[in-house]
Image (tube, rainbow, N blue to C red; front, side, top):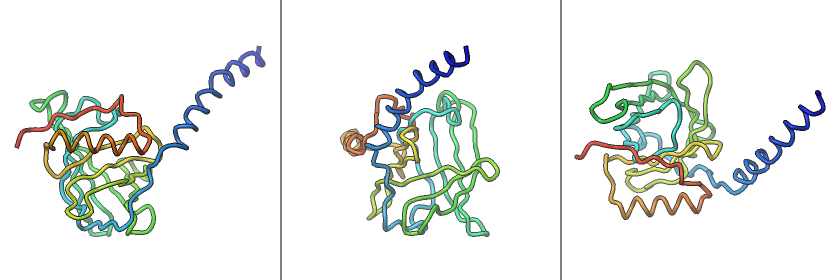
Length: 180
């Protein structure tokens, strides 16, 4: 019975691992160089994201980054439950550099000392007006902007950049944002 169970587990998990491995090998989530944290600070609007439990049903989502006295970055994520008229929710975390400060790689934590990778993979380096952010796996993706709305043609251009990086955009959720 143990051999059958072990065989079944291997039968199910090997194809999953192989597919995940294939996706990981073709994914280009490398963070940018020439990153300037002081220019990245401030409020970003979430234009689109991959769904996750920690942002479930949130709309009008923003992420605000500011410096803490200890040299770390304060991260405050906020949004409205189910619609822009829903209950306002916030979560406060912290971030630090994952490596060289000129590389767009932060480590972000919203719970104790558990950190996740935050890779700024592409962005408007001239004006810091938009950013494409991923994680260490293909399951994390955000399109961020300094404004709550972006032009549809430009949005499609950003999607094409993400496709070229190997992201499966079928699960991308476009976030409702207030008109401004």
